Length: 259
Image 1 (cartoon, helix red, strand yellow):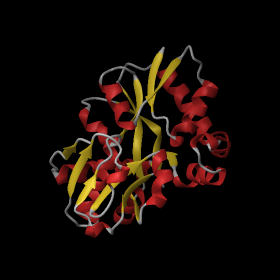
Image 2 (cartoon, one colour; image 1 turned 135 degrees about the vertical axis):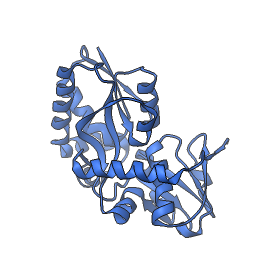
Image 3 (cartoon, one colour; image 1 turned 45 degrees about the horizontal axis):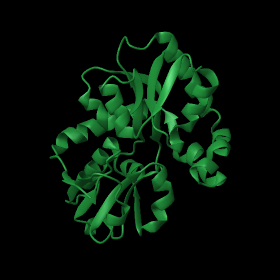
Image 4 (spheres, helix red, strand yellow; image 1 turned 180 degrees about the horizontal axis):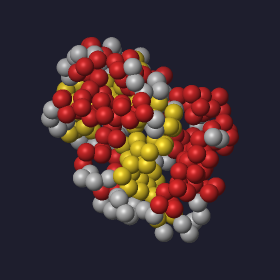
């Protein structure tokens, strides 16, 4: 039995549909966590393979990455935002998302190199929608971001801003595992299952739109246009550039805000 960790967001449902179709309950157990907790589960060896944020990869000394599929976008992704009530150059504080190491690193890169504006970064201990006001912006990801974007005057799509800055797509999460811990036959079965799922995106949208409280046209556009699941060469290059930028930032730990 292989333990697999991934998130329960709409963006992973194409993968989950494939796993459900091609992998039996006797072969694997799928555990659903917030993105950062997927990395924790793999780090603590509660699972053998996980969909982990690329921002979490540096904490691991040795991992293998599945080469073909990821959670990525070739432009605006529509579910990873910096929200605010004022323009970005008028902000003095940005609240990070406690569930997303990748997006937290990405917003810091964008502030330094794209917007060229200095702010304080604060890590709340829970979601922080009501604190985004005045000079305070906030990073929000995932399904909730799909629902709250109209609550704020400004919604900066971090994947779209990255593309403006670099000309590259972005990869938010990749499938990682410890070498030697996952049989090659199972890895091939996972790859086949993911291919099965990403070739049926419209059917996935029809199946899951209501469950995630989005309209069918919105779910279809999100899965078929906003997201891109291929871990291709440009996304590999994007991950390399992301790490290089993070290293150059030399950022300090964000202030922790207890609510």
